[in-house]
Length: 385
Image 1 (cartoon, rainbow, N blue to C red):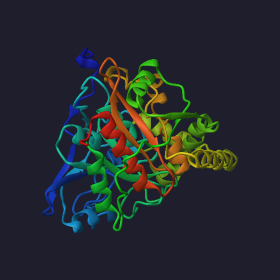
Image 2: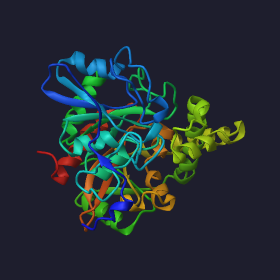
Image 3: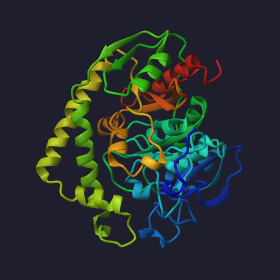
Image 4: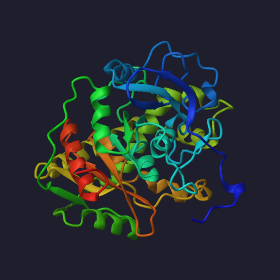
């Protein structure tokens, strides 16, 4: 593995922001630093909130996990500043290492969550996903990451408080652990029976690097897939950026000139402040078209399948080049816009580099999608049969 010159590598650190052990369960978890833990500040990876007061109570998902009796909290994990970036590089809070491919980005914005799971530091980590921020770092680090249906996860105690795109979700090394995490975070979540017959999959036509396409071909070998098109997919990428930018400006615009904010985040935040009622309305029109197209495809299938990332994750040396990182969310961001559940399973290219298989299911069909993901994981040999 070729390593870039030391001067070009951001200082990499363990993923922890703060340690706090609570609970008596046998399964361990930690949470992204935009999720409240009683007694610890939610700094959100930013110097802006370096002096934030400790949270007075746990976020709902943390409280539910601890109340289940199965889980033990180990602490909070680093993230891309204000959850507004895709590399995970963070000079203030520390840049978590990619445990398997240390010369490559860990991915953002739930960087510490992916790193901690890939390193085996916890059984499960909780992240948040506004534009691919769970699935992208999961794919970069070779683990599983699940973005539930929009509205399923309790939002109390998560930042930002309001979003039409964002939701929390788990990282784990097996689908079975993802299911266990969902049972803990969402009271009453009922797993679907294990899928025993081959699923009906629609393979969405997308642009991706040849190495990524070949890795997906190998992963799906032996499974019947039907080709499908989502005409609104490309426009959905831009529409999601418009809505995310406007919502982040509403939540964080007051801090846009704070000297502690990273310049990459500041530029994106200020761009969000330029959105107008007209651009937002156009983006909402794309959202409606995308939802209709996805729902129509899923009428005749169990799930959509496509690559998680269109390219191999760039190296840390390349992470400052916008041309290298902008494409990373092209295939994950649209499903934040639509609100459908999506999960990534780890695969590798022929060269041994990280890639991912992304499955997208019906809105509200989270349990069924996880059952299908378990079937595919067993097919791939990354989970016991």
